[in-house]
Image (cartoon, rainbow, N blue to C red; front, side, top):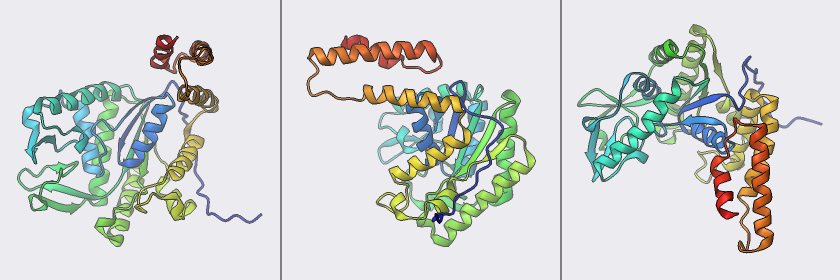
Length: 327
């Protein structure tokens, strides 16, 4: 039978991810998609502690802050449109209350700072080569927070600058975590507001920079999600209604390719068991106050207990507590 897609050949790395692995995801939307998927499947992960970050300079700055910054303080915050915010963070951390904004930022920051030192795999997703620099300070911001564009200089991060920043950030991380594996991806989401040609040039610069980082450092890998969408999924059925972001089926397909590339065979078997339990947990009965439902919950509880004995690295403690309250 004829093949009707140009399937991307992916070279599997020497290492594999399993349920003992600690995974750190940082960057644009793909890292968020895969991070949330693996979190749902009970892998041990930390994903986007600064929120979604698109440009390579801010991503590298995030790593250095996690390594060397003790915490965020009030002078790190700014105020605009009745909201307190940090230029290092996405808008999800903004708040009308300064103390709550700072508390939310530092809670996420502290968890990530501890996690990254022991991470086995760090996955970067790069979104765009375009960066926004605050005119007043020269700071490259992770998010503009709807501040007027006149306050920023918009500039392109050249291949050599992106390469240098990532090599420096990775080398600094490896001083305290020498065995960490690095996986790069480039987001398939087109930054259409930049323009079609400008977007392609932006993605090309990211791809070239990643190749140069791979030339200079060991244990750096590339997963071709951008190429998968451009070739294997060259059809708008794999995009959301805005025709830019991936659809649910597109995300699921790239997850399957990611899992096939990086996950151990044992992990894949465990995933099927985890998914089976999750499906039962997410089951919503018409009538909860029945003997049949209580029997179902009791059976589910026993299944979780048995599963945890066989796979202690997979944490179902919250779900087990919920079944305990029901029973």
